[in-house]
Image 1 (cartoon, rainbow, N blue to C red):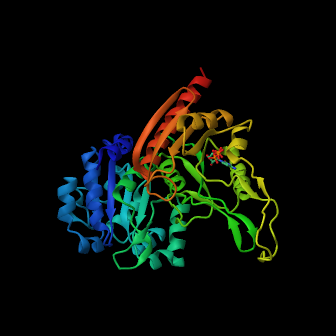
Image 2 (spheres, rainbow, N blue to C red):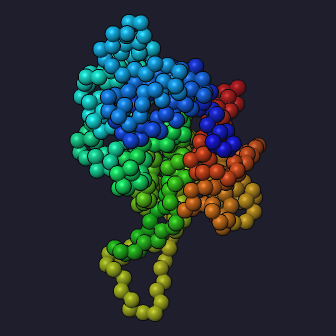
Image 3 (cartoon, helix red, strand yellow):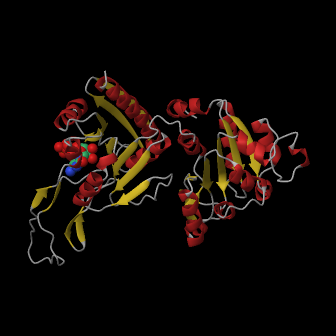
Length: 418
Ligand code: CTP
């Protein structure tokens, strides 16, 4: 891992030290990634036990996990040596958390039906520790109504669902169903252990563009991909928060991980959805590229090209962040500023004009950063401070930004109560 990524994950890692975690491995090609998960947990001082289903052992040898975890691998429900070593009840009692990665469609089905027909399923029934599953399967299997019902049932029972991610699959197809990357799973572990810096907090994130309709087929939009907002939602969930993501139209899949996504189209809809969530909100992160103007009227019929020129009259949209910040019971407010010139001056002007707690500013017009890119660099400003977050992936930046938001929120509460 590079230095920057190591820095943003160190907070998660400290929380994992000396914790007792069971990694359950089930029959999926993604089982090879679990070896890295076990290695990374161990290198951060976690005591790891691995439980494998019979299917998992067809993909990867138990010896690999034995070597990486420095413990015997648990495979059999009826194990003669279990009194001397650990049987499913002993294991279930021992664990601080259980993560099943990868979780196959079959295992998710068995877990949702409370089956206890192998060691891993039985220990999930017997444990009082929090359980997470990281699904990995073909995208059609994931989308199937049966799988979705099973996942919903698990979620309703308090099981955390980590992922899945979208992308190329081992079967040669592409879609939603890949197991999350190991770094993402590690980042989510503190939330599973109930230890993240935003534990118990409620976070609302706005993301993506807004579309302002001109007529039934045309709209005014912008190039925001939503990636930064989605990464922030995931980072806040990983920090232990309950997260609501109010998303404008973008092509990103549902982020999972217990995040509630509300899809909107226009600035007006986003305003309504955000305001609706404010009652219980501790932190509002306004990452959306909200349109500043919309057509004064929307034509009910497609506008025909009758003349050489067309004039659209535009009116201002509501400033969502400004309105939230002006609420009597206001959350901690974080705004974004995309600037081509005078970054600090413009960012600080926004901080003051909207009475924000923090502004995340980035230089636009630089190749490889900003709207459509997977990377960015940010400079953070608050009333009496600033912090530079050097160029990194949006997910790494989001994790770093959420860590700083948690620090600033804590500081704000401390000074308000002193
Ligand atoms: N924002 C908002 N509602 C709007 C417009 C923007 O909530 N109608 C939020 C954005 O999500 C972002 C911040 O306000 O967090 C950006 O502030 P803004 O002053 O709108 O920035 P720009 O649009 O870049 O403004 P300007 O063109 O004046 O630089």
